[in-house]
Image (cartoon, rainbow, N blue to C red):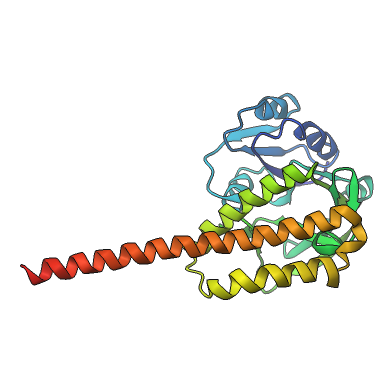
Length: 269
């Protein structure tokens, strides 16, 4: 084994988690599951496969991944999702690392699947992410969604051989449900961050995103799946900004009413 802890956050991943853990066991003797109120057998399956399972409140993707990092046996953290499988070449590459430089982070190539089909173009194609890092210097942002790693200026990024197979969705219906879930989380995050220029984002970002995904990045070459990805991504982008606009209107209305009430109270005091 190598001095790496694997952190996986889960919720109702019983259909996927066993394959993920089995693929990760040749890498590490410390696999940590941060579970968020699963109503299926996810925690029991993980425990039966020798993982350390922690039932935690949901504070967002980044925050919960950081919880796993704090509970890790080793300083080196490999972040994996329940629907991801490291391939044999990547596992071999991990075993060949020296882990003697804590300032290095490792970028890993991803192969993303729509059902059983590998998506090679569009926003899902040619994908790679930093997933191996040392917790002494690096942690996740506390964003509820679309979390990113906070990298110091001295960070040295290296690419690993091999890849991670990402079985992201099995059907159009599942993809739509996931996209809707992420749209809700994004709206909440945008509201917290007081995001502005919602009008322009609402009408321009969805169109630009579709053109970039389907045409510029050649998503149309992935056939029906490429079109489904582009269309649902378009709708997801429009939906999150529409919801944000509606929420901001409600908040502005409440703020105005509160201001009027305060002025009224002051006038008659």
